[in-house]
Image 1: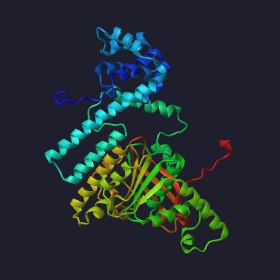
Image 2: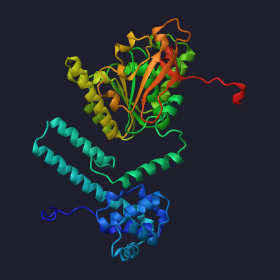
Image 3: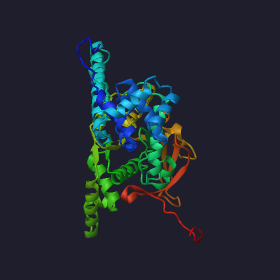
Image 4: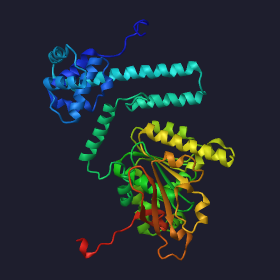
Length: 449
């Protein structure tokens, strides 16, 4: 079709050949190339097949040279009658392996142009077919462009060998990393060990009754991620104003009583601590939107424009649809609406490839039980929420219900669902004066040393 219209498909046969020739001449440059190119970036099929073979061999630490590559091509069923001559030709036409990254850049640039043309055609077809409203089409178009910017393709079947290569890369990165967990650290040690941190593409739900401190623990996590990783944390507060959230962060970081902070009656030492905390908070990249009428599409659109996004925090799930539509709902339709929102949040996490931490209200069902600890069925308008979420954490404090309890500030983070492993209860310390959660200090005996 392109040829009939007089259009030329963007690709560079010379650059593709030079990349593969360089890897055959000097296998030391393979590690540099595999970080820059995917097999799908090659337009010419034979080049794509050779690159896939070298990529697989590199992933499994196999020796790479013309002889071993040819042997693997036979095993993989991509060997052709002229494969040996073609590999020799690639090595001969490659000027030098020293410029391999420049060759790879040309291949990647042409691949991006081809993908951009394909996306543009998809968008044009979508508009002319007239399926859906303009806003829905705009959202779909933004998703496709964002996926290109992130170096991904929306949809399409992928061979298991490519998926396994991605998994192998992730395991290899985890093996050499200094981090004990693969995900972003929450700052709550026992919780991190249980859920393995906040992982990309996951929807993490923290649920509790009002006043239990779910906003506080979310802010703790947001601040820790921002400080430790240096990544941008987007916080969407549908209930509290920006200033209220900032005040909570300031109280927790400075360890100054939040009520004293609001009155301004502070000692000189407390002013000093607030100043130091404000400096630390200002050095992080936490961004807050307190528009109560935000939809999931609005939040997703804002996040797509953030270059170094690490985490999205939403406070809270049940506010999204009601604020967005401004309608009253029957119980049945309300459940359906919230279920739809939870599904959209899971899609958002996968699209942005970052963890999405969402807060949720619990129903009053636990109030009528003797044991008031939350269970999955307590999720308000639960519907599909418990299915969509990868991790569900319920917060509980005995002091919330029983003022005469021995330790009113002892809190429990009950892992109700965990795709990574076990279900358990983690003890935390609630510090009400600072509106923050902290790790329980472990007591050591002489036998521990």
